[in-house]
Length: 329
Ligand SMILES: [Zn+2]
Ligand SMILES: [Zn+2]
Image (cartoon, rainbow, N blue to C red; front, side, top):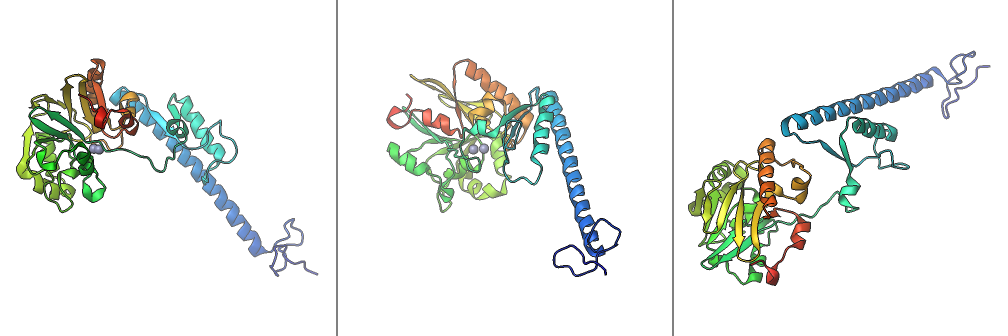
């Protein structure tokens, strides 16, 4: 009598009486197909990881040659110290650990994301958007204007807390033409938000801004009030621009000397967060990395002279600054 296939639910006779497998031909073929597929998948993953390490080695070389800077890799996957299962990666944990080991061998500086965020969530981070107000005896000057009321900007509310009305603002100095810095130049219905203010923007930045279709409504609205200057020029008495291209073509910083609190360099998004300056990290949203690297060197020179560098979006720094009644004078 012929025996039945050992696969549950299968009623076919087993393949060969002398074979060790007790399955039918169909079930045997299916088994071989999945086995082959699993092997192929594993091979593919290993090739991918090899390629990844090779890419990191190339990037490391590039960083050295182009910027004379080390490559720092921030990772969020298991390393030699991780215990048990880590996340739900489809790739074998041991393979991932191996990637870390290989990168370490290459001399790449590795930073665990948990060490950077000290346990804070990494899927969502809080950045502040800074707009600054400087009052001089005869002027009320705003530096950048935030996101604008259409996308959650609160410049008008903040200004209200200082008791200043929009039509009292005499000058606005724009560091660069990104939406989170020029958005507040217009009201929710697209009208100029500061009707009596001259809007100062570096000539290359204004030229660039006019080429951006997403900012066309803002450019059109503010066009008649824009006054351009050469990066590096003194824009207003007490406000010197510092040419800091890189984040955008014509980004400038503003150097302001206060009577008692000393000199401040409003570096805006040339230094969005302190890590850019402290760890030499070129952010991904950089327009021209080598230009930014030069600008960062320039900012460090100011810092060495005792100038306070104010970042564009550093929440920790923002918390530490004097505000309201504690404003700098
Ligand atoms: Zn920006
Ligand atoms: Zn920004």
